[in-house]
Length: 178
Image (tube, rainbow, N blue to C red; front, side):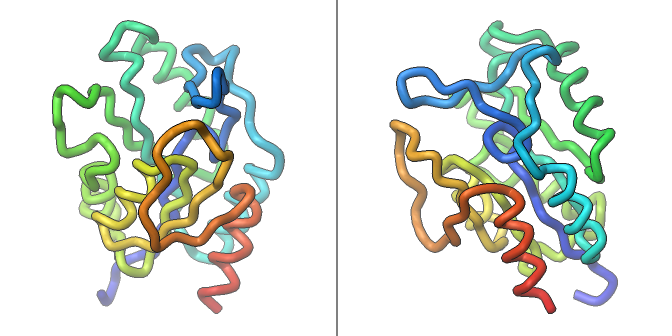
């Protein structure tokens, strides 16, 4: 669409920062002290921005709803992430039982960002490390890139491009758009 912008939607945990993996399952940090950026993230985000993409974080944070994390701690994590080349952070604080439109794999967070930031979804990408991320990309009409940590959980449905990290994903995205 004319006048619409391209974006890279980014899952937070496992893409920008380390997930805490216990018994093969990933968990989000619940405090700012637990936030540890993955190698090359800042540079990858800057290269995407330099290539003309918006960087939009889209993250499920159900630990707030289930009482395992405080909202102010999650907000502090996002305030820290906004110091990076990130244009927006969209968060779903609901659990699965609430069946909201914003919880990935539903596309609500991506659709909201597309509306607010004039994003061309078919020309955009999503980088995630869980099946829910790939599902949200499919539902919104974006190209999915999957960082495969071999978690002990459901695998995403194809199609998706498998990558080892955000820096690798950024390189692929930039090359595909020249």
